[in-house]
Length: 80
Image 1 (cartoon, rainbow, N blue to C red):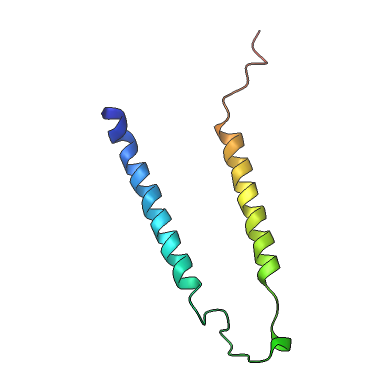
Image 2: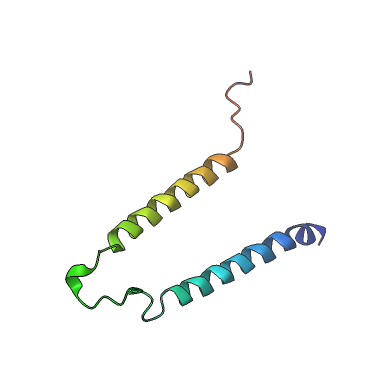
């Protein structure tokens, strides 16, 4: 029970941040939020979708690699 009480604030913080992130994405992707300048012609628009997709994927992979490296137990190869 004591172990659960120690981790309860971090679990609550994680779920709160997850909820805020989901709400943010829902408001961000509402209809009409993708054309803030009101440009009507397709030739005047810049295709940002591939750039954001690659940027988000690279950022996710960098954070994932950092978390994996930071959570690895110390190596015992140097101890004899």
